[in-house]
Image (tube, rainbow, N blue to C red):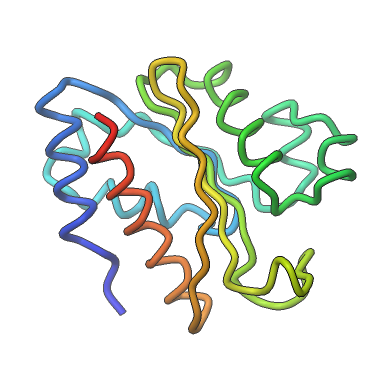
Length: 159
């Protein structure tokens, strides 16, 4: 399945038109979000980079997400995702800070209330947190690409 090229391309174009830059803190998407933006013609002007914090220890060590927050809410939660976006602003200089966590396959913190396919993302822009919880079905790849598409659409709406 190809990445959601049209949504990402449109988002990158909007960012370029407004001279905005973007960076990412990725867990469940494991770098595929930054990759999708790197494939646009606007990558050189909008993409600052990103961090892959798949394991909770990197969320703590690199982004300074408190271990207590992770223990209380799990690594795959809106609370941890929010903190990742806020802390990313201390690590990379950009205009938009995007973080994403979630459950693409069994073995994480899934519960009946938070099944596999549940994804969280936060866009931190101009001091405002835009928080989303979405659900997708399908293979891990399908879940990731659907999430990337939703992130791109959200960013396009808020900038």
